[in-house]
Figure 1 (cartoon, rainbow over the protein chains, first blue to last red):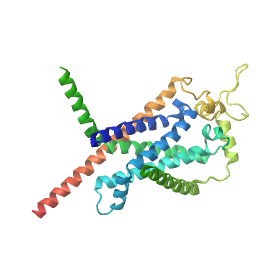
Figure 2 (cartoon, rainbow over the protein chains, first blue to last red):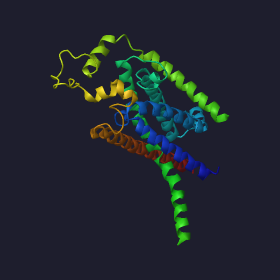
Figure 3 (cartoon, one colour):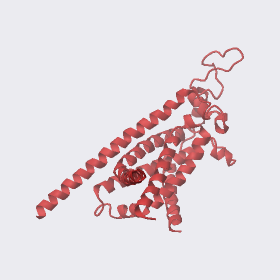
Figure 4 (cartoon, each protein chain N blue to C red):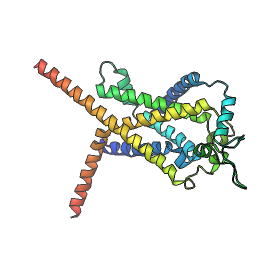
Length: 159
Length: 130
């Protein structure tokens, strides 16, 4: 796959993850069952997203103090916070699960501590996700720009 | 194969973080608190009820949103299902989008600032080298 095509595929996948993340954050709107099953799918998508950017993660971590740029360092810090918050959200969500675990025949108890941990981790996740998105707007504009130019070219040829 | 291995590595890292979080958060015995919280949410016995129930109806829960979240039917298509909720629940989506947008603006500004500082440093370095 060429660089541009790869970028567009990445963009589509990332947009799907972004939309999913927003839907995951509103259990009162979507319903608990949908929230829980979508969260599982979201975690799987996040692991794929991380695996696809493994080289960047590895390089930035390795050269954190010397080689990496300030922007990369800030990015990796935000991403680490985001990933940790998502994992805590997932873990605490399992402890207060109303749909996924009962569907597997496990009846979890009700825990205030895990509920509060879930709410706190979700808030941190939302903030970190927004910052993560914001930090990649330059890349987003770069990817969208050639697509727009390509579209204009096609329309010009049709005329 | 490479991607599969990387995904496995991501899950291993997640498991380590989850284990650490579990060790830190592990809750104490809170059965008493849970009972009173559930009653407050309108799930358990209500003695005395917050409001006298209407004739033939149940007592109104103190926290209807929480009651909808924790009710048994919420797990398998009940009051918490999409479409059956009052329109007020859509404000939650608006709030989440607003918070996300605010954080995105903050992230964009942070990235821009960091980039500018780096460019200035590079320019200063180049000038001193010349």
